[in-house]
Image (cartoon, rainbow, N blue to C red; front, side):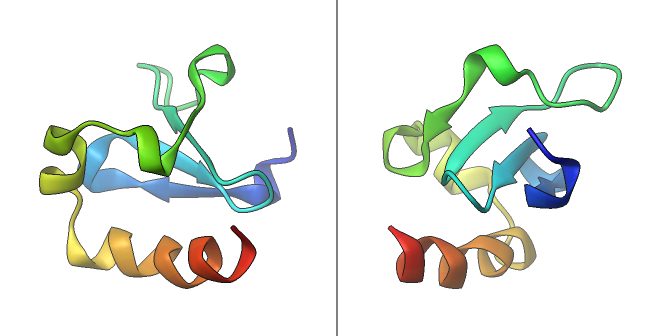
Length: 67
């Protein structure tokens, strides 16, 4: 996975992969846990409630246009 495809989502401690549309949790070393990727549509309500407007706006256009 290329780091250039990842957008850091600070408010929810995750990364968004712009190429695949998957969300990866951030590990304690600030790297994505690539074994735990999931679709944005499958994220919990808690995740969606916690995401900041700034982080949401980083991904919504990419997500809606691609997927």
